[in-house]
Length: 147
Ligand code: ZN
Image (cartoon, rainbow, N blue to C red; front, side):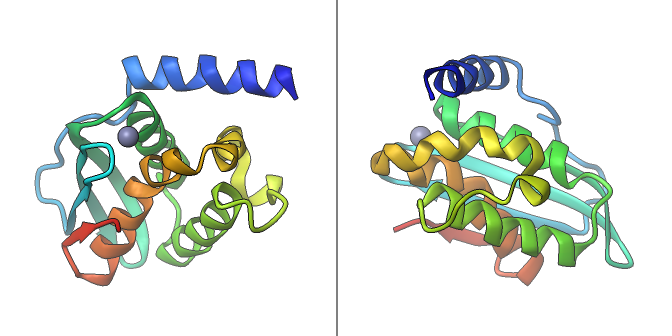
């Protein structure tokens, strides 16, 4: 468990400092804004969807290392996936960080590193902000504030 925790810390620091897909998308088809008032994290998420495939996904904004690392990993994981796969992964991620289910490592892949967040209820909203924003973006809701 301490190895997993170390891995998690290294991972979050790395992605927090050097987020992947941290940019804007020209001609984005979907866009979402997310805000986590508990921590002050803000995210703008953009997607380029063709048919039902996510051709490009990127984010910008300012937040803590966990929210940034989570958004970074989410974009890496969902690149090239279908919207149905994205929704399924959202569900699996949510139940993992809320500690409601044993992580589904096949579905979660790299995202499993965030399993440790379940031990820190205050940080769950940091880890899920990007995902709620994604859900809002693909459902056409645009803005989401976690409560
Ligand atoms: Zn945060």
